[in-house]
Amino acid sequence: MGRRVLFIVKEIEGAEPLGALYVAGCLRAAGHDVRFIGTRGVDVLSQVAAYDPHVVAFGATTGLHRYYLGLAYAIKQRFPSVLTLFGGPHPTFYPDAIFSPGIDVICQGEGEDAAVELCDALERGDDHRSIRDLWVKHEGVVYKNPPRALRRDLDAIPDPPRELLYEFDDLLRRRPLKSFTTNRGCPFPCSYCFNPSLVDHYGSSWKKVRIRSPEGVVNEITTVQRQGPLDVVGFRESIFVYSKRWLREFGERYRSEVRLPYYCHLRADMLDEEMVELLSWSGCHTVNVGIETASERIANEVLDRNIKMDRLKRGIRLLKKAGIVVFADNILGIPGGTIDDDLATLALNIELDVDYAAATLCTPYPGTKLADYAIANGYFSGDFDAIHESYYTESVLRFRSEREKRQIENLHKVFAVAAALPALLPVWKRLLSLPPNDFFYAMFRSWYLVAHFTDVMPRKMDLEHAIEGLRSVFGVFHGSDDNVFEMPEDEPALVVDQREKASACDTTPAPLVQAKRLVRQEGVHVR
Image (cartoon, rainbow, N blue to C red; front, side, top):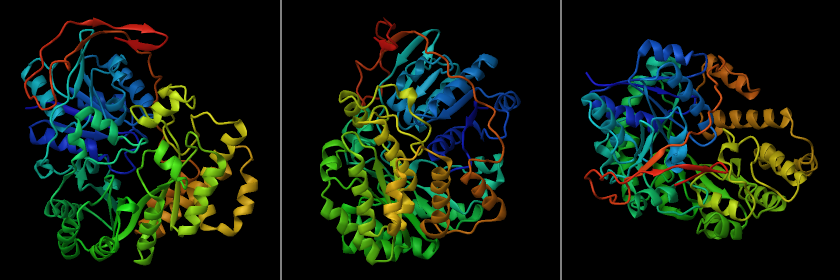
């Protein structure tokens, strides 16, 4: 019969949770029953009681982890026999989440095979303490397991079963923008990104990009087209394409079978005339490129981008010449930078005439080299629980003064508007010293919404979506989320580290080694 697995997704109304969906597809293929629910307007505990799952699964970025750890604890308090599985970026890079009393298992890295092996073991009543990619808490003992070898053939992984989302809310099916991926892995060492941390976990094999076949990608898109409205395709991997040969084959199929505009992510310094021509020919409407900072010193010494600014500028100009919309990512408040550096970044966006100048506040996520740098140089306390759910609100970093912090946070809110209306730049600069206010935040949301629907990812919007979008500008959403519970304190546990006698390429279970007692010292786990 299989295990019943319930995925709980906060903000399920946003972009599809592809990571969780890939795991769900593998679980279903292995004979397990899977459901998805959101949290807004939903009594989660009642839904858990109604479905009676064997496993409740969550995936979280840092910031959202507080919400999920609180919810997991509430679920375990009421349903102690349920096994809670915590995956996604936060437990991957901060596996000490296993010590939260509501969590039974955390998954590091890609979760498809580990989740199937876990549920298969639970179904058979087998020992599940030695499954690779998992840290398992069982009867007061935490078992740390080594990583497994990466799947090289991505085409063998079932497509994400989006119908599980639509069964929860048909509005998700009717959304005209849907997300896809073409590859996994990344060869670049950017310090603010998760990819170098996955190299630490999996070894150098993570740098060897695994690429889906053009046929597999296009087949998935045409399947989704048959399920509901689709106006624009969003490719969500770090870098959409590495090979012109792959892009030519993809373009032939995409132009013939899909015929929709698409959005993708690329490094501008990788582009040349031929690649840009192929992008345009194949149907690319928008490219998301990372400018991040105008300072080549900060880009290479702090962000580890290994980039030359002249090549970045050339790539963006090639995209503009080809008529491709340029969505530029920028990071403000980088450790070692100043408000003047961030204003120079704004000036570079204006110089390059990008179509949308997006900005985020620099966030030292756990497991990143940027976090290590920020802690070592006094820019960050190291308290990852202080990180906000979104890098669009305020910074957790230390600045030279409170005034500069306020200026940078305000610049973030007006960055896109200032880049689009440079004639008003003197006005924006005078406003940066104002206290944080709802007007700046509403302007930030409004400009983002309008630009995305009319330029970046143009798509039709029905009345229900339009109303929801307008509400979001002012932070008002359909249905409240009443499933907010306080994040519990971590609990000490015995630790069995099973990684010491295993390698990532070894597929045999690692032997148990002698447990070491976990102690607590000034809030830090010491093993």
